[in-house]
Amino acid sequence: NTEYFMVEKAMNVPHTICGHKRQLLALRKIAERGMPIHAFLFSGPEGVGKRTIATHFLAGLFCDERKNDAGSPACLSCPSCIQVGELRHPDFHFISDRDSKGIGIAEIRQLKERLSLRAWAGSWRGVLIDDAERMTPEAQSALLKILEEPSQGILFFLVTSEPHLLLDTIRSRAVPISFGTVRDEELVSWLSIYFPEINSAELLQFADGRPGEAKRFAEDRELFAAHQKMTAKADALADGSLLDQFRFTDSLVEKGSAQPGEFLGRLISITRDSLIKSPDSAGLMARMKTLLDLHFELARASANRRLLIDSAFIALKEI
Image (tube, rainbow, N blue to C red):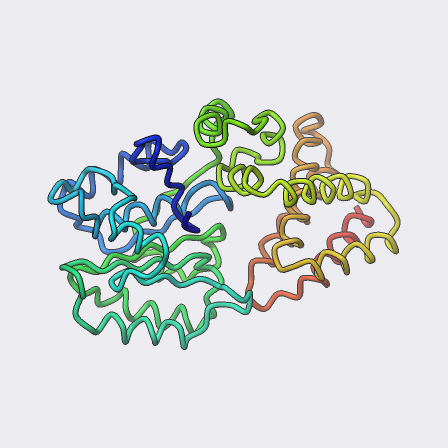
C-alpha cells in the first residue's frame, strides 16, 4: 500500500477516484490537447480527493502502460506509477507542510535547483505542492518567480483548501479547478467496492461527503472511534463552561496539529445544521461568521492554535 494511491490490483480498476466526474473530464480534455497548461490550482475542502486526483494525473506523465494515449488514466500499478505513489520517482517533486511549521523558502529554492536539472526518465517533470496555503510569504514569492518563467515539460499542481491565502499573482498563473464534496450515493458505492466490510452508513455522517476522510476512518477504526468521541465532546462543549472548554483546548493541542482544525470544523458543522433549521437567526449567522474567520486564520502557518480555539469559545460566549 502507498500513502497517496488507493490501488486495488485484484479489482483491475485503473481509476479509484470517488466522484468529481466534471473535473476529471476537464483534465482529460486538457491532456488530449497536448497539455497547453503548466500550472493548476486545485481548491476545495480537505479530504475530498484533490491531492489524489493531482497525483494520479501526474503519474500519467510517467506511466509505463499508458504509452502515447494522453487521455487515458495512469494504470497505478506499473513501476513508474508506484514510484510516484511512494514519492520516490526522480521526476516527481512533492512538497508539503510535514512538520506543521509552514513551507519555507528553503524548500522552494531546493525545488528550483532540482528543476534546473534535466529530466531523468523522459520529457516531463511534475510538481505537487500540498497545502499550498502553508507556504510562507517568502516561499510564495520564490515560487512566483518559477511560475512566471515556466520551463517546457514541467507541470505544477498547487493543492489547497484555503486559496485566498495564496498571492493573487500566484493564483493568476494557475488554472483554477474547484472541488466540492461528493454525494452520499457515490460515496456509498465507492465504499462498497473498496471497503465492503465497513458499515458505510456509520461513516457518512462523519465523512461529510469527503472520500479521503471516509478512507481514513475505514482504514483506522481506532482513529474513527477517537473521532466519534471527540465529536461527542465537541457537541457537549459547544455551550459548556469556559473552564471545561479551555481544558479541552489543551488536550486538543497536545494530541496533534490536525485536532484543532477538525474540532473547529465540527463546530462549524453543528452551526451550519442549526442555520439550515433556523435560517433567519442572527445569532447563528454571527456564530458561523466568527467560526469561519477563525478557521481561515487557523490555516496560516504562524497561527497559535491554542489561542484560536480559546478565542472561538470566548467569541461564542459573547454572541
